[in-house]
Structures are given as C-alpha cells and as structure tokens.
Amino acid sequence: MGELPEIHKGLDGVYVSESTICKVDGTAGRLYYRGYPIDDIAKNSNYEEAAYLLLNGKLPNGAELEDFSSKLKAERELPDKIINIITESAGKSDPMDILRTAVSYLSIYDNDTKTQTKEANLKKAIKLIAKTSSIVATIGAAMEGRSYTKPDSSLGHSENFIYMLKGKKPTPDEVKPVEMMFILQAEHSTNASTFATLVAGSTLADLYSAVTAGISALKGPLHGGADEEALRMMEAIGDPSNTEAYINDALAGKKKIMGFGHRVYKAYDPRAKIIKGYLLTLQQNPSAEVKRLTEIALRGEKLMIDKLGQTHGIWPNVDFFAGPVYVSAGIKVDLFTPLFAASRMAGWCAHMIEYWEDNKLIRPLELYKGEIDKKYVPINDR
Image 1 (cartoon, rainbow, N blue to C red):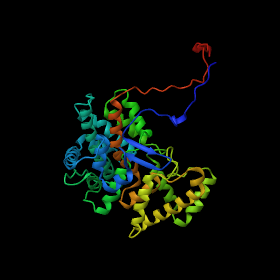
Image 2: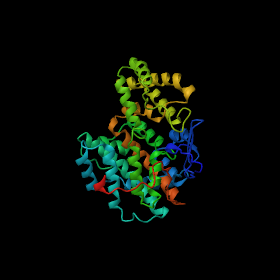
Image 3: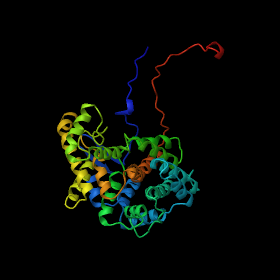
Image 4: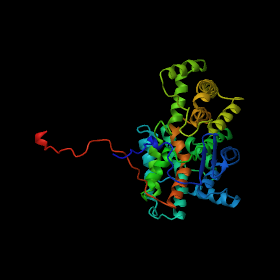
C-alpha cells in the first residue's frame, strides 16, 4: 500500500490560488487592501472608495470615484417583488435566510447573467453591492414593523443604508461606526465565505449564484455570526463586575469565547485595534448601554490576553468589539451578520472576477476510508 496523503482538515495551510486583492499577515497582525494598510483605508476612505479599490485594483481619482458612486446610487432601488419577499418573511425567517433568497432572486432582474466578460461582471458587482445594502436595510426595517423607505441619491452609501433602515436621515455619530464597519468587513482574503463563492463560481455559474454561496457560508457562527455570539455573551455577563468570573468559568468548562482567536492571525487583529480605538473615543460621552458593553469588552480583553495572548497566540478579533460599535449606531443584533454580508459583497465580487481571469474548476480529493468490494445482498435476503 502506498504512502497515505497528508490531510489538511479545513484546508488549513493550503494555498488554492494567487491574488493581488488582499494580504493578511497573521504573524505581524497586518491587513492590506490592494497593498494599502487597512489603517490608512479606514482613516482616509469611505466605503465607495474602498469598494472601487477592491474591484479595480487602484484608488480612484475624483472623477472615477464620482462616477462609481453615481452608478451605485442608480442601483439602490429594489423591485417590488423583492420588497414583498422581505416584508412577508421578516419575523418568520432568519435574516440571513431572507438575504440569501433576496440576493438570489436579483438575477431575475438582470438580462445579462450569462455574459462572463470582466466588464459585464463589474456591472453586476455594482448592482450587487448597492442592492445588498438596500436589502439588508429593508430587512431591518421590516423586522421593526416599518415599511420600505426609498433610497436617497443625495446620501453616501453608509448614510443611505441607515436612512433606509431607520426611515430618517442619520446623524454623523450614527454614520461613522457603520462606515467603519463597512470598510473593515469589505474584504479578508480567502476566508470561508469567499472560498465558497470561488467554489461555486469556478463551475462558471453566474456572479449571483456565486455570492449566494458566500452568503450561505457567512451565516454560520464560526464565521459571520461570531460578532452576534460575542455580543450575546456580553449580554449574558450583564454587569461588568461579572466579566472575569464568567470567562474563567467558561474557560474551565473548555467553552469557546467568541471574538477571540483566528485561523490566520497569531497577533492582535488590526481591525479589532481600529474598532477598539473608536470605542475608546466614545467613552467621552457614551450611552449607558455602550459604556456597559465597552467595559465588559475591555475587561474581557485584558483577562484573555493575560491568560492566552502571549502563551497561545489567542487575541481579540474583529468580532469581539463589533457588537458595542453596532449598538452605538442603533443596529440590532439580528442584523449584524446581514450587514457583514453587505460589506463583504465588494470582496466576494472582486475575488470572483479575479479568479475568472484564469478559471479552474475547484475539485479537491478526499481519502476514502471505507470498505470496498462488498457483496450486494438482495433486499429480501437482508
């Protein structure tokens, strides 16, 4: 019998493609979009500029950004059928299930789904980025019993999202955290949902089908749902003074502390640093709820770093501090993962378009461990 192949469970450490879109330096705790440090993008860009960069491989000039933003605005409106799907499903289905169905249904309104040129797919990407944001906002509004709010072309991407979600124009304090999360969650290399997108798209399925696979993968609590679970943990802790006892008990029971550890990062997640920094600025005038959650987060962070940071390389990731930031913007927990999907749509589309430039069907092998040449027994003799 020949030498058995090495199994990389979860494809851990396996390279599946080459890309110029995103660099995750897990050892140093650095993240780059098209070569630009995420710190610079988060500090200086808006989501439209970050999305343009991911899709086109360069920062836009003023005219290019204005044109790209105008195209996004032109695609925000939702068809009546999709609005009906959302309003009929809200409160009955998981928001991610509604999102998956609505995004899949968008293909019905595109007469050019089978054209696979880069130009055609960039147009589809703009449509998907714009409409996914509108879908998520409409899901959130419907869950609160509010009717559909038509998009406002005078507002930027993040501003319009909040406007459609809440039915009123947002304040700068509401926009800033949402804009930050849109940018920080726009892209992160070949994570589970991006890989799912590539697997589906490598069959030469259309872009709508590919990103629907990405949405399905993002739903799980080990990926997109982690920020929800981290906030629910903070809610279970209740009073900040309970933080250490709660986490110590959880660790003693070998329970996973959501928002800590990462498959790639063995240092502090740079996105978590940016979000934490934002939360600290909020402490000058926070709401009571944000203050409570932030104190729990900071105490939990210190305990986990003292126990597992240096010794086991387990540090806070982007999900740990996301909850308090969303709460500061008035975003409900059930909308965290759909909003993640709306943000990541730019990254999914960028990776799929890039992969199609040199497409190869993704078809891994598995090592069969069962019996062979078993004798078939007719049903009456079993």
